[in-house]
Length: 321
Ligand code: C5P
Image 1 (cartoon, rainbow, N blue to C red):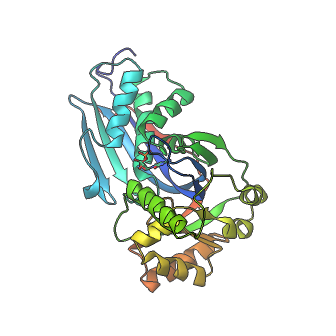
Image 2: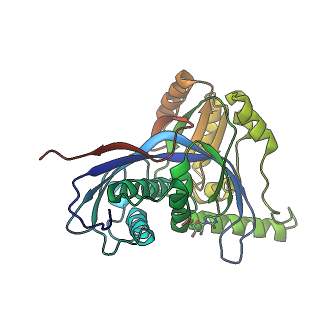
Image 3: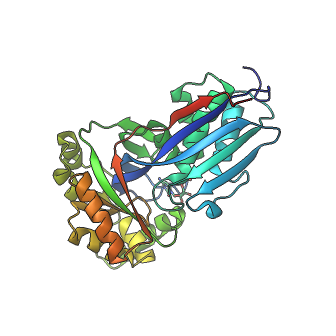
């Protein structure tokens, strides 16, 4: 295929997963404002779906969870992903219809926007038959956002740099989660800035030195190799958690409710406000979800398991005539 604008008939649907961070170690801000990270990403079975179709005019529509909070113009990361792919493939004047079905809440610390961008990259790559490899797509993804490459890769992986430099992790077993969604979203940039502020205040008070370079938790990696959630649970860690809790103090109650109801580990996911609770099996995750719902400590609860693959084509078809 040589042009994005040929009258192609195919519609391509891709689904991409949410992530939780099993470890999120954050260093001091770099000159470009980003923070060096060492993180352990883990993709879970909560998916957004993106369908792309040839169109007369590029347009984006969103349905499902939090749809009203998602921009429909070129500021949407999925639109940017389509534009970046068209540029990389040398397609001028691309036109595509992007339909997003959201199940991952917006601004929740679950990388939902990044999942949509990853899904759009893969879907348009199929639709336009650009021939770009997964490695090419991952490189493009890094230019779109820190979490987008992981949306393509999935599984369990160590992220370094801004989070975009990925190495698959040796992890066995499957992990069952209850996810407690917050009443309002948190801005990732604001959570990082709050983290810096809290650290500076603590250092000024002589409480603690500033953060050093982030390091991978070897005990967590060993626990992941064992495949035993009881070993993994207590080793979950997130340097952004104090910042998320200072912006959303009610999350303390959410975390406490999860711990009191048998979670093996309880943590704010990424920049929050979603709280992720690790359970020993699927039945315990269900019990935990019920307990969190009846405790009234969150807006909604979902169950999910991981690891799951990254963005995957689920339908690639000729629409009926
Ligand atoms: O890369 P992404 O656009 O997802 O990042 C959103 C915001 O999160 C950035 O503008 C930055 O404020 C913050 N961030 C950071 N360090 C990272 C990743 C994100 O400071 N490693």
